Length: 131
Image 1 (cartoon, rainbow, N blue to C red):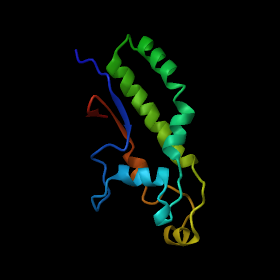
Image 2: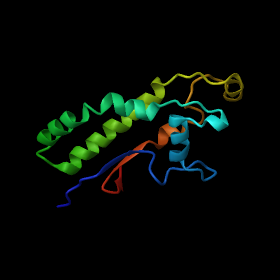
Image 3: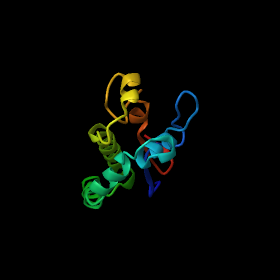
């Protein structure tokens, strides 16, 4: 039986925009900002980790017990949960506000959402096997 030991959650390697730009790169720029390009930080990812990371050990321990100590099932459930927390963090992030020119181009003022490709690409994998 395979003993999973690694869970990865976020914007995995294969996630790209139609022009080939890695979604993880754009997510990092959005999270940390790019001052030279006039992009302020909107730390949706780092804020989510800071807010939720203390919950994860107990949740994993409880899931292991509930799932008869099946690590693969536990990590898959955990991955889906953390991916959901990351999506919710994008929904909840509204500061700093977008520039007026960006609002006009998009037609709405919600940061971190344009085509929703970044939001939809959030995924997880257990030991290199995606969901």
